[in-house]
Length: 292
Image (cartoon, rainbow, N blue to C red; front, side, top):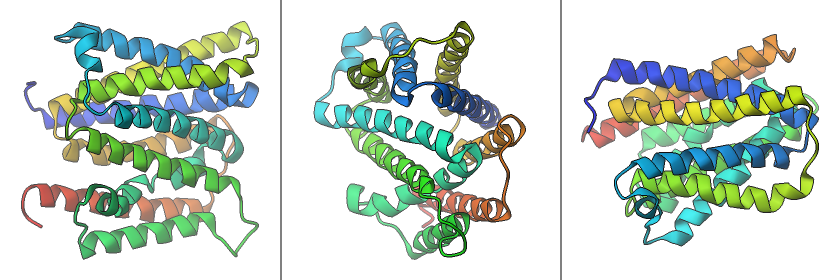
């Protein structure tokens, strides 16, 4: 077991958030030029190779990583994440990075709300209050009834729901499988599914965009490696709040590179959602330590 170093873990999570934001920006560019399914398929090919390379270096190799008593759960997780990535990349193209990420930040609240019915976990009134406040923030972002409602925002909301379900299924799978096994199925199942779907939408790419695709694959592998290291050296509850910086990095990229605008309602709503999300994380951490 690695020596715990919370400060290093925080910096690794900050780096993770930055790399993933860059990945989102590249995904937005490529998906704006080519079919979303093809872009995600190519990304998964590299991701699967990275996952298998990591598994091969661990004790027992690929056979140990693939060993599971709940293949159905693991396959469902892999398919769900692949579908979520496709939906989120589509949201980047249709809605932009700023608003997509502002809406997506509600996923920890969805995890908290659904952890009761799916995992049987107890959610106290404080966290339910935070969930309610957080979704009020989402309504501020969407502004239904105050302007022409953007149906594209529902795509980002669907992505948040799918990612929350993926997170809950990962926690469910962790009751019997190791993190290495879940990581292995995430990459390999996703690659198989995306190949079966995305290969039918193949389009020739320019040399410049192949370079962007290569960078997309590298950022994906780098981001996951940094995330693994962050959780390896520090408690998840200590570093997870810094994952919200991805919203800041992605919004900055959307404004400076893609010419998106930051509306007042998006900024206010996102701030409320993040604050509510941080509160639920703090309550979860207190509960783990027997204080709630």
